[in-house]
Image 1: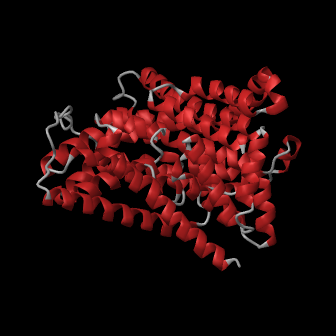
Image 2: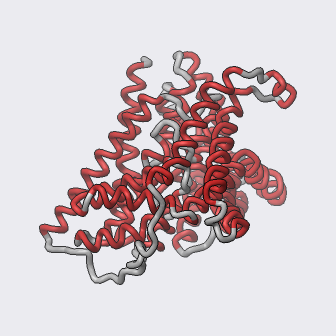
Image 3: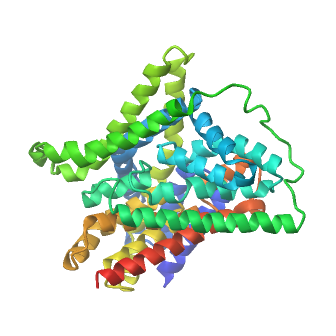
Length: 459
């Protein structure tokens, strides 16, 4: 009981410090060690071991496994921004749907950018100036912009849509020997449900504002000159995203199924363990090469652009790694065994246990990637053993894990939430309600439906 209270206090402290703007890179190890002191029992006398071996072990392992994804994704996003491909995609969708479809236009623009591998943070930066002008012209309250961006970028294209290269869909591959296209039918159904329910909510909010005679509000348009330069042709702008999708599909479904991976035995690996991650990395590198070759003369300083992408990759990577390190320390304490036992005893069905475990740990860490890694590091072998007894395929377990990572992760102290609100110049009080509905409540509801239906099928 004391251990659980201590864990709750530890998490509360992480949340409070995040609200106050302190980086998890600093707070995560400090709070982790403080937690060890309070509830660590005998291990409380071994603080430096917990820091250098356990915390840094989890931290460095996450970097080893996912740094290439963060690095290539950030460089790709920076190039998409530099050559105005991202702006072209956003403008094309918003211009062709019209002012009466402003919400849908922003959501689809965000979804397409995210599905193309552009990071959530970059999508917020790209979409906000366009959404700001469109919301003003359509007289829709500015306070609805963050929730709209969240629906397009933080939900179905992050966890559900088959083939998405976002890290939340990449992480399960290493544990289940799968690829990003796992359980496509479940992914497509979940995506449609999230999009439909999210749009229903946001449309209701717009209509309610109209009835209350609430317009855009008294806000300054910071980027009214967003169309000062003509963006490239839409087909050219979409080409890198199409390249990532087709290349990923080819390498994961064809190429790596044909080659001999026996050489990996000496590394204690199989081709199934790594081919999914390799496919995503190669696909993004091909897309990066395409953009550079096509725009070599147009990019004023390629070195600066690449360096900018490299710099942009560090903060999200290190923040996620810090959370994973924090989770590794918590995982080493007796209280985690208690928590794990409580979750696993809720149901003997691995689908239910996995969904609950992932969502709860993602909520604890306020990080989809961090919480997903911590959970699968601890419990993937248990889920695999449980699923084998019921003949549940690894692809199903992959998709459930990815879906479950999107829910409690976007609680108020989540980094992407705080960043998006800051970009929009709004507060939690102004806009978090819509972020909560679109990126927490609806994804959890949809995941619950998928879990119930899938569990019934396998019982």
